[in-house]
Image 1 (tube, rainbow, N blue to C red):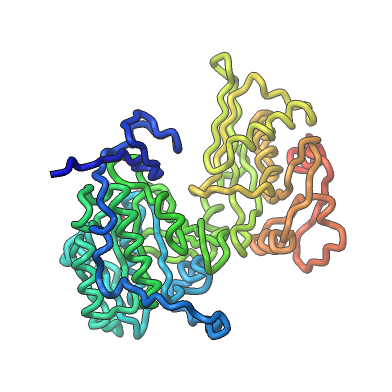
Image 2 (image 1 turned 90 degrees about the horizontal axis):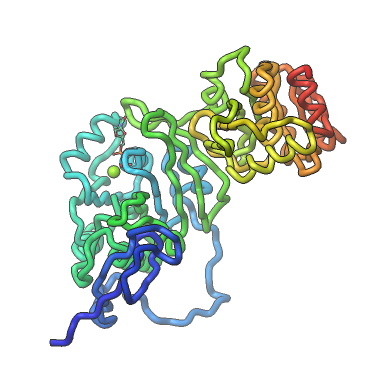
Length: 458
Ligand code: TYD
Ligand code: MG
């Protein structure tokens, strides 16, 4: 018998090497190279009829471009992040840490998929456990369970047989890491298995027009393939984020072939499952403390929606030689740049201080429009002067200490006025030609100094 050939595959990024290495040269993760048997191609290729597309070249002129109707789930936040609903024939990956609520979300969309047959393939829970969850989630009385089939199976070949038999419109695979093809000898959850299972499902979706929702775990644990290897295969990647200890969950599109990628959906985890958050700004500001230093309110835009959030800063004397800089929910490098601008252009000494920044509510904001808010919170904490609690601040900070204009200023102003703020500090350039009907004082500033004067009275 011929000796079995093996290779080492990085379980984080899918990098392949012929010899073992302690650290993956591609993604720099340690201890992620796992030995897997190389399967001869022909053995993998014996496949099921559903997966064999007719190899016919098509005349482009005959391709129908009629907008395919999207399938609405009835959970608006979910539909919006997808770009208006599930596209038939698409594969969506829902990735997130264990326990964040992926299975809950997948179960909750079922009652809304009216008239569609759903097959829920569960590789992690038993059918009983799933039933218990549906009880807990209070499915509406009108929900007809004959259109909701559950299959507890992890062998993908058997799953595909069932798909052929019951012919569902939508297939939920929970999770892709538990699925395996017996033809491959690597363990379920290894990169080879995950990649193979996903590509089989991808083929199936494209050939049959069925939509597939894949649940994927994100974990640094070397044994389970991070969904990173799947990202380039699937049509849409939705990241489900949030602290397990906090009730808020954010669903973010990181890749979407059928919609915008900066849309987010906000949910709250309750005892009856996930609830959509209709007025996120109120929630993110609900625990604000007044009259303390180191806190400012910024107006950012997430997708198409304005969102008001609190930025907190803590500046303390550094106890060691090199001061610490930590940021949660805000880009670390951007924080370094802002601190340098404060030192050099605004004349605020910070080289002897530790600086901590946090975006409240578990949110992560990459928009430069919150720069001015971050800077304000830092100076407020350093000087121990509270920022005017009735003010919102918006603006990008340039390297010369100037305040640069931001997009969609009207939306930001309106949201601030709606939540009862009295004043908003915006870049001077944004005030030009600004026509807005909102009850709020608008102050345009050109320099960081001016903003600090307005907000901290210094
Ligand atoms: P789950 O959806 O199983 O997470 P995942 O599939 O991402 O691993 O649920 C995660 C957590 O949510 C679990 O710890 C229990 C909690 N939960 C609620 O708080 N309320 C509920 O109604 C449900 C169904 C779950
Ligand atoms: Mg789960």
